[in-house]
Length: 602
Image (cartoon, rainbow, N blue to C red; front, side, top):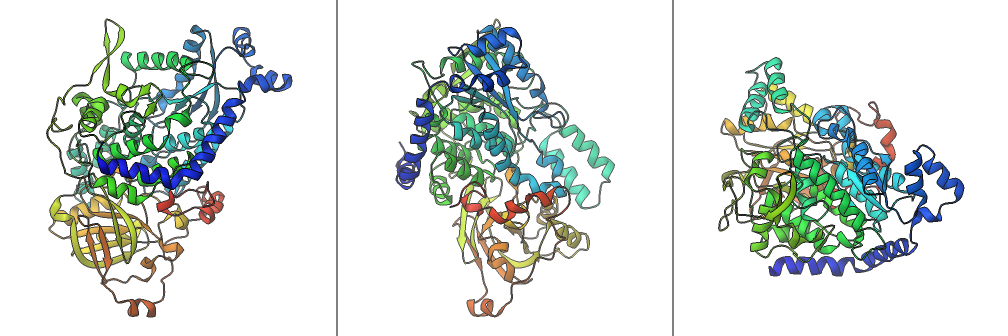
């Protein structure tokens, strides 16, 4: 195994020893209690089966039968989760055919960052992850279940479901993906139209027409943002069937995979020789495998938050230094928008996750002995196919398209797509996989704002036509929920296109679509908790070096001591659109580097 990957794993094991041991002991105790349904009182059990038909009641009263919990993120507004409308009935029917049962244990909220982007609701987005974790735990707390299937895909939803399920890690648990929508217009056309609209060259009707062509059918969005990063990383961590992440929605192969997963879940429940609970899947090896896949694919910066929070729920402590050390030895092996023009369907056609994992395995960058719900990670180097209506797996082959997934002896970049920046301003993360090398180092005067809407106004007034590091402060977890700042991307893209050297520095987020602009994100400590951004002024020189991992403010300490911190000037963001209900989150949330979660005291 690559010595750096091996050492990072050992560092995590050593750092987490006490916490992980306590977690495993808790899971073993829960598993040792046997069938939880058998411990319910007669009245408890009567309530749990009251709405069932007689055959299902008989199965639920037979404690040798498996009862599968369904935690669903279904709603019919969001394309990625709309297909889940039919899944519970499908799951229940197939489980009944196998002689077992399934129940919807609970639903979780599923908000879409694409819908709330730039709107008031976006201030609730990050907070929703922890709420989803709690909702998942509430659903499973009825303790009538032998295994769990998670129906969720996007953004904060799938990470939140996994975090909640880890509190019930004695249950075998799997994700059942919905699959991506078919490809619409090209990503190059999408970017061009957005930039033209930002520049005032196209009206809103033209922009709307383009957006409708890009997002046009059931299934996940096709660019490589947070939703699809979830799927790739979680398949690498062994949380779904091999090769199942990016099979299109509403296809025969998707249906066959779902059926096969249900048969498999029955076989890995407690009492059998193949028992494979979630806590045995999510260990230090799985976490490192997920980090390697994230880096090699140029995935979403949101996972510098989510992976830390997920690991913590499993009693494992990781930090940004682990990301940085792995990034030095993990090459970029795939190219998808915003890192390149291709979308997730092109990635799947090029060989998908099994092909991608094969490349990582060739380079000794993965723990191939890591447990998965389907065996070991070595069992994931195979792709599912339908032959005469039967589901078969074939060994993963070399890339069918070396412009999307690298050829065996090639790579798109020598290092991973994420970098950690450190300096006198604090620590931040930057996605480098889409940023050209000539744009990865910049020294320019600051233009300081407190929200993305102020940046838009300044751009429209022609106040940003210069080399600049655009600073957007008071957008961290404790300030306003750390909303994503995607309204800035077309603007900064236009400025860069005009020949200006530009970068973004913020304690806010940008997810997987940060694109070709160097963007230092998640700056910690955040402004609202004493971060130095509160003292920045227009014209302060800022040096950003994504190659060496540096972010520096060229202002003397003496001058900074004399400056007063500037108060947040943006519109109040703790009222309206339900935000007043989340004031406790703003008080309790931890730093970005600790996962931006409210779930832990430390």
